[in-house]
Amino acid sequence: MEDFVSLEEVEESISYIRGRRVMLDRDLANLYGVPAKALNRAVKRNLERFPLDFMFQLTAVEWADLKRQNGTSSWGGDRRALPHAFTEQGVAMLSSVLRSRRAVQVNIQIMRAFVRLRRILTSHKGLSRRFDELEKRHEGKFRVVFDAIRRLMAEPDKVRPQIGFKP
Image (cartoon, rainbow, N blue to C red):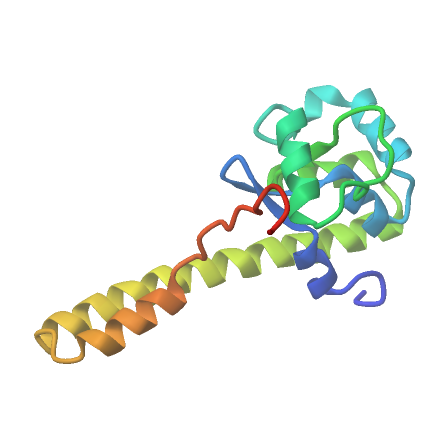
């Protein structure tokens, strides 16, 4: 089962767009071993299975931002249409549209990756709560240590690339 695709490979394909963890059509097609065109055609034939909370199309701005984050304007290839993003539920629904053995096994790995991410996020919140309790108990005696740990736990600020040339 693990021969098809690794959990790490799946996790690297998960993006965060519109406040949701999603996978792009081209990444899913790559994991499933089918052309993106074939995946999108199968989805298009079964649109009633993909409401907006399962799948949405990126805007031109979102697509440009995603390409910029990846460090190259040609990332994602030459596309005529904007890519589709699939939520966890949308990926699960793909298993009913793509029926190959590989698609089933890849979907299992994708579901495992989403569950793993959820566990990590849950434990992160629990850890933060425990730090708050510990800090209160010690009345701020270790404030410097707690502040440093909180900075490490915090999500990094978005660094916007500078436009223009340096003098």
